[in-house]
Image (cartoon, rainbow over all chains, first blue to last red; front, side, top):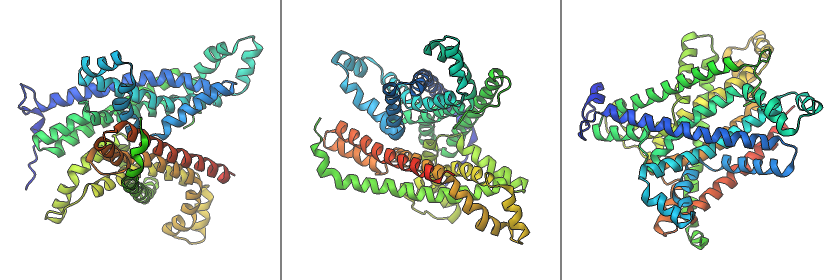
Length: 248
Length: 221
């Protein structure tokens, strides 16, 4: 059993319609980006809210946020995904359950599950970064806000959060990159994102080294370009006179 | 919901948990050893060695673990055949373990590197003034201190690996999650077994991370 190297495999026909293997990778990358970006929107919104909740002077509110973080950080991502995909739809009210299972295409229902799963999973991590950012600010900021007659929501909106977000960009970037990598679990519930397309190419063409090398290169390039992009953002919004102090 | 079917399934689930723990412990041990070597390479004065180690770390940190596991599962048998020239049967367990060690080494490398860099420069100078070689300095002076400082971080990374071992599901290895899933499917109670698996993972990870926090407080100066 010999291995036949063929780097031209990506331009060969898959035997399905007029598609070439490269088309599969493009489709897969599209799904990967769609999952990651949609999940990130949820993560950023919910994570910011939770991060604020963890720092407010109210035991109940911060307790709820702490519980959320502990639960979502201590259950493996794959278990969470299975719960969202296999268990949660069965708990929905009958009409919603039917809609999810029958009216939606399999790809759409898998997409919804994985986006919700990754969004809530990453929110726990974003929450911790937001909390670190808020706590890294000098205590005087809060006091000064009160002294100026601001109410607590105003202090958060106009004083604390604009500063906190800017100093936590580096750790947020790594969470942002993580959600792209974590989106690969979608392949385990049958969504044809990048990793699933790679596996399929490896199986169809028998050129597994070429397929996995290309996938690696795509992930690597994606990662590097996002990192450079975030560095630009970081420079652009840096607070003058502050060295970044975001914790990890 | 009826959780009574879980009790008779416990021995099977325990076997799954043993595999999960095996993967984690061996993965951490291999990862720390390889990661330490990588960290020393990254900090060495040899440019070529330092760059090679940095490339390795950046490479593995920018791709998903699931990709590495899948790739190695397909590739390790081929690679072994090229090396040994004959068919060497290698199980999913071995290929997964190799994947974990190589992947985690990149993360452990960064922890160890930060640990080594946190040791005051004078320690290195003093050891060399006493006539110790580079190897002796590392082994007897720098690394013992660095490891003490970074124990909490190493343990946290190990807890992450404990959770990530569940990804071996993709190659059909019977770890704890897969044992629970397959039993749930056979017995027609997938939900109960999935919830149980989640609770077990949560309890172990939560307890372990609380212990690490305690340890961190105790180690803090």
